[in-house]
Every structure is written in structure tokens, then in C-alpha cells.
Image (cartoon, rainbow, N blue to C red):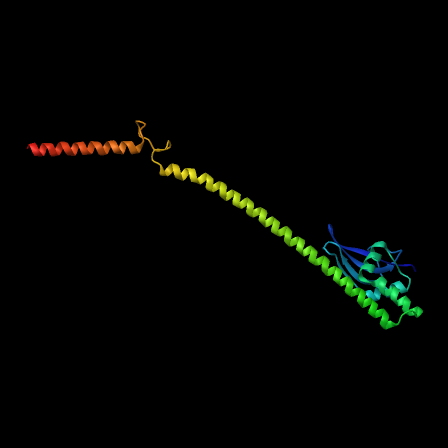
Length: 200
């Protein structure tokens, strides 16, 4: 029975995730499988991959052939590396301890590169957020300055009684001038009354 290590699609439209399975090559893509050996979610950055490396190595040693995508995932998680080292142990080129030490060293270097990628992505995200915030602040400041500029002339006009927009009387004279005339008339009437009193 020819066995393939391949992906089996799950998830809704536009949001897929995949099981990594060992299955008969004649079975349907989403049909029966022999063993589920991992999980792959490509919608995140970096992609989420959970793989049982020992099960993958067991299937590889039994002759299972991975598809192109599955091979890339197995290589990324170190299953192909471990299978290669296991072949060296079988041939006597390495001891079990040496193979394990080499594999652990490879895992550490891989973990460092993954952490670096995550840090770079996080920095890029923070930078983009800061740029958006600065752009929004610039727009907000510009609007505030425009509003202040529009409000300043209105306040000056309201404070000046002789400006063109001052309230006018029915005769068309500003209210301030009318008040001056009324004050003058009142003063004249007061003088006339004082004169009458003195004559009397």
C-alpha cells in the first residue's frame, strides 16, 4: 500500500487549516487516513505548525512519501534532519548520543531564527502603529488650528462695536452712536431744567 504524508484541509471558506496526515495515496484528500501526525495553520504570521516529529520519522522510515508542501513542513520542523541522522546511526557513522546532540543543536539554531523573525514582525507592527498614530495626531492638530483660526476673527468682530456687523437701528446708525446721542439729549434736558429752576 503506497503511503503519502500530506495535508488534509479543514476550516471554513477563506480560513483554512490543515491536518498533517499519513494516508493511503488512493484515498480522497479529506477521506480516511492512517494517522494524524500534526497540525498546520497558514493564516497566521508566522504560520502555526505542530508536528509529532517521532511519528513523522517513523513513517518516513517505513517508506512514506511526503508531498511538496508536507516535505517543506517536515524540513522546517526537523523531521527530515532527524531521519537523516537516524540513517547515520543505522550505518554506524554516528552514535545515538551524537545524533541527539546534533539534532538538539539544530533545533536551538532554528528556534533562534524563528524568535528573530517574531521580533522583527513585532517591531514592524509597532512602527506601523506609531506612524498611524502620528498621522492621526497631525490631522487632529490641523483641524484644531483651522477651528481656532475661524473662531478668532468672530471674537474680534464681536468685541469691536464699530465693526460692519454691529447691530444698527432702523435709521441705519450703529447702536453705539444712538446711545451717545441719547446721552447728549438727556444732558441738555437736565441743563434746561436746572436753568428753569434757577430763574424761578
